[in-house]
Length: 249
Image (cartoon, rainbow, N blue to C red; front, side):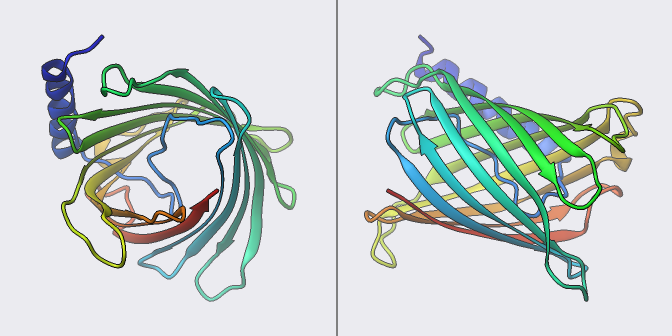
């Protein structure tokens, strides 16, 4: 069992790494994902993101937790280059497995793995992905999340190697009441695309972004998340914005 002082030290170190570790990610609809799975919980979600060049991406999710440790997510992804029409970019089957659970007194932590397979459209290669997710509440109203992603192409046209990415987020519950809810969180998130394992570029050529994130939830299960990130390395997009809207039931 991890006591609160140790967990606070870990979280503080994580926050310091966010500040010191230039981080980005070109994903317009990506999230620093949770590791928690609750049997019987279902949700639907729509995501939309834009970058400074007018490119856009969207996703539609359906989630179903069949047990206390296994959840299935179905994702339809769409993309739109500036000045062009929307196209379907892929269909993903994502399997969540929770291997560690945080206790009701916030001791321990939530740990999970996600295994994803994306069926690409047109003649492009499919994609296989693995993500390690860790989340932990500490010091009352605080929570930190960390994700490590590894993706590789599969099938005809695959280029080989593994694309590596790290994501982090730290947030705090706000003592405010607005728009009919008390469930508000404010935080900062970091997305870092490190490159392909065949040839990892130098730090400044990698894609690193950082920015604020706001989360809101209502008693009827509706939730909203919004964030803005800015690039802090030459290999990153200058800026992006995203909006997620969903409902748990």
